[in-house]
Length: 297
Image (cartoon, rainbow, N blue to C red):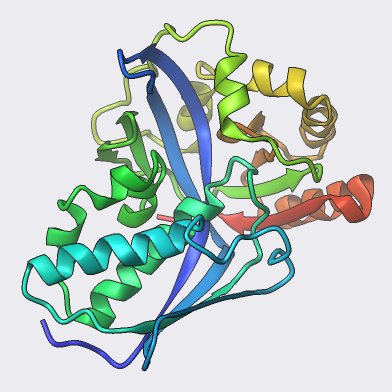
């Protein structure tokens, strides 16, 4: 594959419509069974361009708390992809990476994971790498449980420790309103506070998908987020945000995403989803963050 001059990617917000914790491995990693979707238009933006020396810059309204050194997943992704690429015989020269940060950190919507996946995808284009081979390299799961699904970039049932992905076709016309009360909830303490790590998996997904929105919503009502109780105990603001979202006109399901603290509302109408996001923003004030977007393919 021929190397390219530069590449730009949108790192969309990842939303766990359902998240069941089904076990714990001997090494301490929790086993998950989750339905993951992406919110169109709700994203960080990342560009990669060849350069005389490596560079990484973070700008945007959510740039403040983001590290720019080796602790950032984007930097780790760059270094891991470069090492793999050079092992495959590619030059993988210096690049400048610019991240325009709009998603809140430690918010349960995979901001850092989406950024790392976007970096991997853009680097594959810039360095002329085979994307399918990169997907099978093992880099994505080594970076984090959400990175493989973010790299795949489509709705999926995610199992194991994030490495087992099955594409899922959702009914069209679904919209998400997202609301974060402005509190960071690190994943580690939430899993530590989890009441049980051995819970039932998701209900069976109908072969060929669901027969319309109502059938999907009925299925979703049988699911849960096993981390929500633990996260609410650590950050009571989540419960208040959940209640406010559930009360919005047209909200068909309100639930926390990932390990929190972002709450989503699922709607079957764009205007209702956007109105809910606006109402929650007024409710949360300057500390809060809200957005709305269609459930992406």
